[in-house]
Length: 505
Ligand SMILES: [Ca+2]
Ligand SMILES: [Ca+2]
Image 1: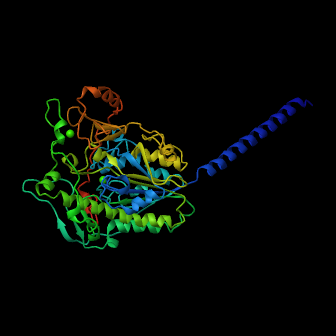
Image 2: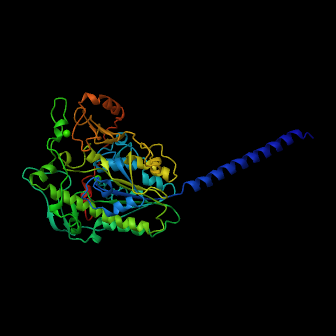
Image 3: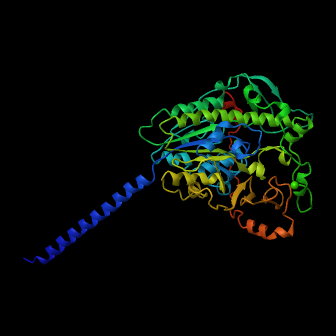
């Protein structure tokens, strides 16, 4: 009997077993090590509709009273002073954040375009789905995705969550209402009006949504981590909130935001014709001398939103989840209160592009920190994946800023993109804002230096001294421009499908 082959086989088998053992030890060890180093944090994800930088801890308006957000910042939140939106109106901003892709890649540029009808967006795994498909329980209330009319009922992005609820609430009419009116001027979009609700604070929509979120923090989720998304509808127009929030701001003490009447004269086409004029809402507030009233109404609405979110933040701090939950609070784009002669969004100036963004990460040693890193809401998706130990999504356009959260003083000046409609873009690196109107005004440009011009009064684009800055920032314009995705054919169904307070449309 020849024993040599048997010996070889036995040696080979033992060798194989040995190798398998080594592999098992290594992989098991890595898995245990990985689980220890990256806990499965919960996520509280809060969207505040149309909130600009008028938040106490952000300093956009010294008159504003936001005690709850300020306390959140003081007690562990990082306040981003240079956070920007991917687009300056609800749907494209939220669609980009939630799909992780810029409008230039999806074709979702406007409020009338549902990402579910866009060929380049409809099959993307959205942020809540990514968590929901990887062991998280996902739930939401209020506006996270933009809402679209649909024959099957309102599409609110409920398909992206395990649970999507309507906590109820409404205004019950108004005890007083004010609306600037001038014959011949009609502002489009949502009604430009404000007043006091007859409903008590506890009966209003945002309060009930925030209370619902607070109540969820008393639940368990079958041992799973949670991704809890909460959308507040104020300070979106119309500005109806309970009287107690108007009472915070006596009208005779309100100092309206500053503006220059000639501010738009230096934003011109090749033939020197100005591109922009005063907006309709500005003309209404200006012509009726109601700037103070309008500013006060926005301030009141911000304080209302702050009061409501305070209910959720207090509940979190008193819950079992206080120490293992990431909190991200963001506004979907900015809002002009008369700056650049506008009331509203949909522009590419700082007041439209900059957003409030507050973050708290468990175990962070940072408190009451302002971070000047330049980030974009589109960076949230990859950042949350990294913080929660989920695999990266290689379809994401954004850049994780987890390293910046660990070291908020780190230099972080990657130029970032804000788009409004097809081929109009603004790039900021934290010092300069460069804007190109490729789709709107024959390639007109703007350049502002925030070192000494934070309100962007002086357009430097035609100043030869800044040619090298222009050349540098132009290289960050997108190279691909996906054509407009189809308009949602069911937009008309939106209003008829909406129950209760439809102010957040
Ligand atoms: Ca919005
Ligand atoms: Ca100007």
